Image (cartoon, rainbow, N blue to C red; front, top):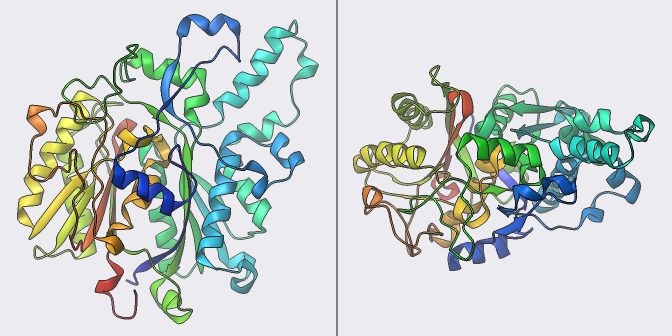
Length: 421
């Protein structure tokens, strides 16, 4: 089946709003983790304290007017910005494709909780005068609010939908978009993911109660995945969209190509709501590699899903350590120490972070490791220092979500494909 080219990237995260500047910070090992509390919602929440989080900061007014900003949710703000940047980066004119031949596939795990929380706080502060509830809350709560707002802002009249798949959501959204293009159902797809979760008291409370949120210790360093003393994940905010086209269409219009989607897989553990399954995750990775036609004479980079939990990090490390020796050369890195875990957006954002490797031949290291877990020591793990002068044939992005939904994307170096550079 035809390969799918990534021809534009739009991104916002705590590291910034441009891939070029973000890439520089990644290569320097400079993370951006802030803190947030929820007292602005309700003074009664003061006892909860603050959490570490990666928070996005971007120009809301670049693609939305003041009225639309007030009427829409944070996930819509993030998504519209990232989509606009992807379209601009690709050099595409939506009208030239025909607006009905362009679609939107957006992954989200948990979204817009804070919109509800804002209204509940307003009620609590005003004696529960229900007439004060915003008439825009209904549309803000819709699962497809962000993809719908992208459609409205850019006049995209093809399918615009949301994919729910926990932390695998954006990868599954990209896979679904890839299928639509291969089937000829669309000619251009905007695909990616969004997360506004660090701004939600309920999301933060839920993860803390579940025991998987980073334990805040005043004055101590924030520890990332694979650190010996890691205590859990840090939430991150952000969004990322790719413009996807069939390889033949990208060649015809002379588009720049960041990478080419050649394979993928999605499966489920069917075992636990939150505990990962070794065999299911390994099979998902292996089947994705087979679907992409990756041969053992290839050099590969795994962008790991590892979130900072002891069990999850170790299991993924063990799986990849059993797979990587089969290839000519291979490495694994992690991006969550830089920006936190952006949940449903993590697959797209972290793939975008690594795609420049095809061009600059550098692999960014992990960050937030003060003492490497002895059980995760390996020549394959790029733990504290970037690697330079490497030619990578394939980037493989792992995402694993709650309810055991696993998703793996395989992206090939465009230099391997005739006519694409």
